[in-house]
Length: 142
Image 1: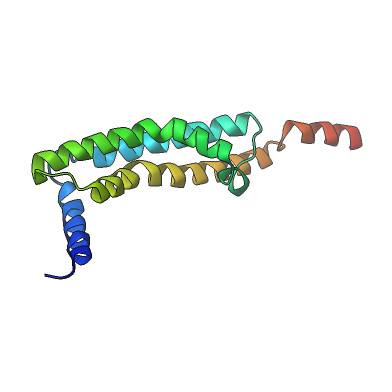
Image 2: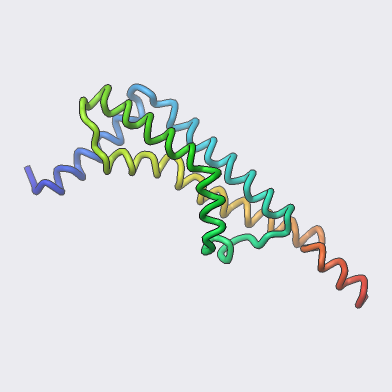
């Protein structure tokens, strides 16, 4: 037995590993897939609108609001399903484990996929003539 924090970390890690093959294990595939699809859809939508992509957009409050509106429901479903899992298997709810699991299932895949989709959108936009205003400049000066 270690300190209470060490015990919580060990218990949390063991419980996370046991979630992979226990009840409700399909959510480890479904929820990241849904978060990824939502991120790609949002990045494509921003690219079509000519909105900035990448680091500049990730720092804005507007991006955080749009991202939460896209992935918030997936995150909340992840929280509810993990709470149900914990009550069913552990007979208790461990809040930090619950938030860690929900973050790993919903938020991390969204952020990673959003970055990748933004990079693809930037590359594609560069190949296709970038922003519509660039076409105006090219035709005026070219």
